[in-house]
Every structure is written in C-alpha cells, then in structure tokens.
Image 1 (cartoon, rainbow, N blue to C red):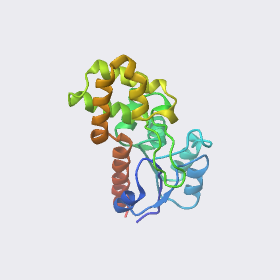
Image 2: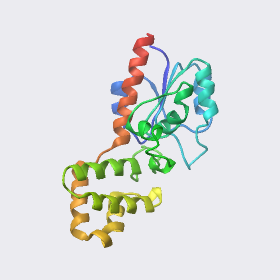
Image 3: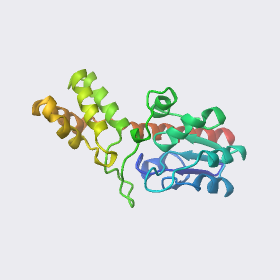
Length: 217
C-alpha cells in the first residue's frame, strides 16, 4: 500500500480512523507540514484538520508542490475542505458536504469550521458553525423548532467568537428572543440528535483515501 499521511485532529477520533485506514496519522497540519510529508515520500496525503489561529495555516503553494510531485492530496471536513474548494481545479480532490458547500459558495468564512480543542487529546471544546447549521436543519426537519427559531439560533451562534460557540452558549444568547421553552427544547434535542458534519466528512475522506490506495496498489 502506498505511504499515506493523514493530518487529523478534532474532526474524528484516532481509534475510528485507524480501523478504517492504515496510515500515518499526524496532528492538525500547520505551514510546511504538507511539503515535508511530500518530501519524505508520502504518496497520498489526507488533509482533514489544520491549524487556523494557533499557528500559521497550510499554504496553497505547499499543496501545489505536493501535487507537482505526483502526490494525491485529498481534503475534507475542516482545513482540508477549505483548501480543496480553492485548489480542486489544480488537482486536489475534495470530498464531503462541507467541501461542496465551500465549492458552491454556500459557505465562505473560515470560521465556519473553526473550533478550539484539547491539544493533547484533540477533543473538541467548542462547536463549529458547520455542525450547528446541520443540527439546526435536523431540528427543523424533526419538528423540534421552526425555521424562524432556527434563524434566531444561527444568528446567535454567528455572533459568538468561535472559541465560545457551544450549544449551551448559543441557546443562552437566543433565549431572550425565543423564550426558555424553545431553547430548552432545542438543547434537549441536541443532547441526542446533534449532527457532527465534520466527523461525517472525515469518515468519507478516509474511505476515499483507502479507495485510492487500493487502486494504486
């Protein structure tokens, strides 16, 4: 199987990733990591998680460098979705709903996927907007809240700085407009029905990388 490097952090737990794909799992990518992996002989690189504000982010030119060397680069879920939407016309492959939303212009801002996480365990400590959006859609589809309620909650989430975004903080910020009954009902739904779109897309990416590896032998 070709040498595979995957940059993975809070989007998916490592145990699950290892069960899907035999790869060198590395922490969220920062500037220079993609080029270093390509120079070290990686033939397939999966970019899922990367740093945003903690360090210097992955540069477009290093992904292009890897592509010029013949490395297959797959992006999804978080930083990978952003870079794939920007570079898919130049050879990077994007997968997943978040990538498609950026590619089609339905998402624009980087902070849609930004969150804070435990630097040792990579456990998420805040909720990215992409997950909040997906959860709100599910709550409307299930009849937990209506479309107007969802818009108020989304506006409340967008008004919070990304490290402060949790469902509890969002509900607290929206309670004056919606009332405690609506926000309490929403939080009860979240405890069981929250959607983790970033995790879903990371799973799709790992499956796609596995397919590529099997195709290339």
